[in-house]
Every structure is written in C-alpha cells, then in structure tokens.
Length: 476
Image 1 (tube, rainbow, N blue to C red):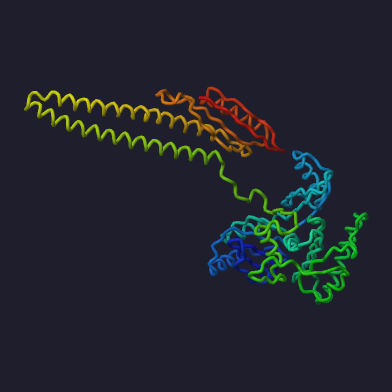
Image 2 (image 1 turned 180 degrees about the vertical axis):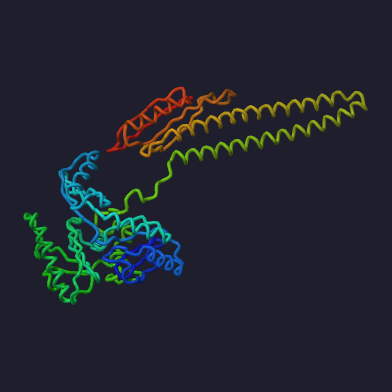
C-alpha cells in the first residue's frame, strides 16, 4: 500500500508492507504543479511518480491519498433515529439542505454515527468533482490504483488518543482545525495562511481557534468548550508561542509507529491515513468516510459467473475421468480379441480345443459386459453435464440487473441413485436484490425461458433497507 499526502511543494509518501511502514520519504514538485492542494499539472506529476516508483523498486499499486481540506466541505447534523431503510433518504435531504454549493459540483459521502437511543449524527463530506477526477486520473496514469481518498484534517485527527480533542495542524501554506467530541468530528476548518512571519501566523491561528470555539459554543450553550473543560489541544507543526497563547492544555500528536521514527510535522497526515488500515481500532476516531465515488472503485466479480465456470470445470474433470476408464476397457477388450484370434487359429489346427475357445469367449463376453457397464454411466454423465451447464447458463444470463446478486447455486439430481434414467435436476438459487420487483422480474425471465418446468419462489424477505434476500427453486 502506498500512502500519498499532496502539498504545494512536495508529495509526502509512505510505503506500507506487511502491516508496517517500510519507507517514509518526500517527492519534490516543481512550483505550480500543485496549487492550494489542487493538482494543476497531472501529466508531469504522473511522470514524477512513475520515476519515483521505478527508482525505489516499489511494486505496490494500491494507493491512499489525502485531499486538501480547502476543497472539502464537512457538515455534521443530529437527526432523530430513523429505520435503516429510510436513512439514505434522510441523508440525501440533509446533504441538499446543508451543502453550501450545488450537489452537482460535489462528490458526496456520509456516515451515520450513533449518539444515543433517540439520535444519530450524520457526518457528511462533499469534495469538488474536478479535484477528485484530476487526482484519480493522475494516479492511474502513474500506474496506481486509488482505493481511499480522505480529507487531510480527518487523517491528522486520527493521531489523537483522546475521544474529545481539538486538533490544529499547521502546514507551510495553510492550517486545519478539527473539533472532535466522542470520537466524532463536529467542526472541520481549513484556512490558508497569509504571507506573514511565524509569530503573526501564530496569532492568526489563535484568533481562528477562538472563532471556531465561539461558533461551536453558540449552538451548544448547555455544554460549551472552555479551558476548564479539560479538552486537550493537539498541536502539530512549528508555530512559536501558539501553545502558550491558547490557554488550553496542549500536547503533541500521538506517535503511531516506533519504526521507522516519523517526523510528524511532515508525515502526520500520511501516518493518520496509514492507521486507517494498519490499526483501525487504535484511534478513537469513529469516522472512516471515503471521498472516492463508487463509480471509480473496482467492481467485485459476480458470484454467478464464478459458479458457472466452477461447475463447468468440475463437469469437464468428471467427463475426462469416465472417458479414461472407458478407453482402458476398450484396450483390454482389444487385447482379449487378439488372444481369441490366436486361439481360434490353434483350434483350426487342433481339433478338440472347443473348451479353450469357450473359455476365451466367456472372457470376451465379460469384458464386453464391463464395457457396457461403464458406457451407460458415461452416457448419463454426459447428459447430466449438458443439463447442468444449460441450467447454470440460463440462471446466470437471465440476471441482467446490476442490483441482483447470486450468492449460491445448488444443483440436485432427483433421479434415483444407481439408475440409468435421464437426470432430473433441481436448481436452488440464493441471492440478494435491491427490491421485490427485481426478484420478480428475474423469476419471470426464468419462467419465460422455457428451460424449467417449474420456477418457485421459496423465500423472499427484506433483511435491511434496499436489500432483499430470496431463494428460488427451479425444476427441469
């Protein structure tokens, strides 16, 4: 796994192998390639990444990356607890209501976090589409496969070991402030630095911190944040005098790795993002949103397709095994026939050898009987193989809906064991779908195919919102 943290001047990179960080380095960028956290020269950056991976013999392709907080909108709202099947509709309403720009300009995602028996918190993230599209194109051109994008402030906040904390992360060109309560981010702000000296920047961060806390306290007068609240401030970065000026208890971020030792003033976001997969239970952070839209994530291979090829392989193996037994019997029969011919010649020379001839003829008849015994199962197996393949092909090709998934396909021969009658195949299908109508449409296609004499819905029930579980029985 490769972890990337983009800044305006460099890419801070971690390489994670075997559940540990094996490489931490920075990849310098030319001025203007990245501006305010947005990639401006994707082709140049892709080339630089390819050269970096090649020169360091890095074969990993999966990549996680931060997204600048300046291009991310975060909102958290408390809503009454609703049934799971209504939660997605509630989230869509809250996104439309709380995002300050049109949803057509954003990729959005959300996560529900339990607060109490009566309320849940909806944590909503919107990221500019052009920012995400450019980052994905850049990484793919470099030969990487992006799997997780996370807003940079959320990644840094994962380095806090306290469920209640205020995280301040100062970078060369901007700073982030995150208020986390009960492991859930409440407010997230990213502010660019003006061109000032370090002491002026410290004063600016202090003012922004006070403004952020006052904004929170205005809507939470029953439990305001004050220095007496004993909520620690996690400071990351080098801003002189800031810790003393805040008036709060300040401490550095959690050092997540003992080896290699990481300079968290540089690699805080990368370390927090790596913790997401290396130590998911270590941080009290309860939020694990992914800013990559589902359309860019790899699609799992359908279970029905895998089952079809598996059954086909098993049928071919069984056919070859029976064929090899039949060939061996044919060869043995041919050898016995040659012996009969030799003995028959001797009979013509020596009369009175009828007894020997009869014995050989009996062996020939026995061999022919054994051949017939193997020939019948082979014919039955061939018919069963053709029937099984046709059933599976019909079951899998009838599924044209992207929301219906086949989990198991069970085939049973109802013909009596040991008989030579044609196979009587019963197919039982288990799967899930997004709705009743999808299941009924799939059942109707199977009935209309003419392949099965009987198509029965044995079970159909909704296990959770937009997920129906069903069991079908098909008889030839």
